[in-house]
Image (cartoon, rainbow, N blue to C red; front, side, top):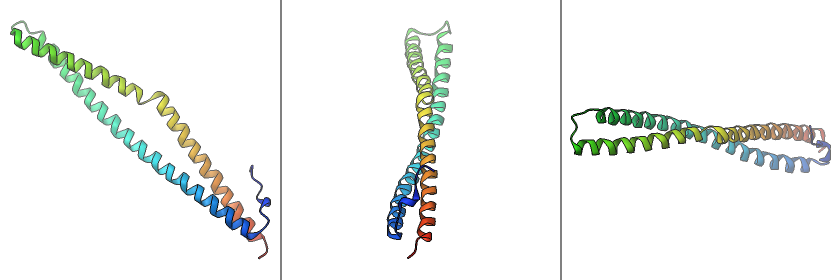
Length: 139
């Protein structure tokens, strides 16, 4: 351990240190809960993006298929061309969004989660050490 619990000379110091450590632990526990919530939101977002991407891909294929028909009127050709352009744009935007959901942001989220886990471990060990020190000191 990097901390020296023997710096606490009285039971009152132990009580104060433990209260402070427990408050800090509460903040990390809250942060951990928020990270879990963010992960659940990201999963819902990924599902939504995947679903919308499938729809845009399907719409693009349909518009392209319709444009391949020789007997289309000029009005229908314009309409399907507009649908094709819109679907292509949506598809490209959603593909880009899907790519951005991983990479750097996913890595940094992992680092953040590991940092919180590390702090919780250190704080828990410190609280235990302070409690042991408190019990070892005379009243």
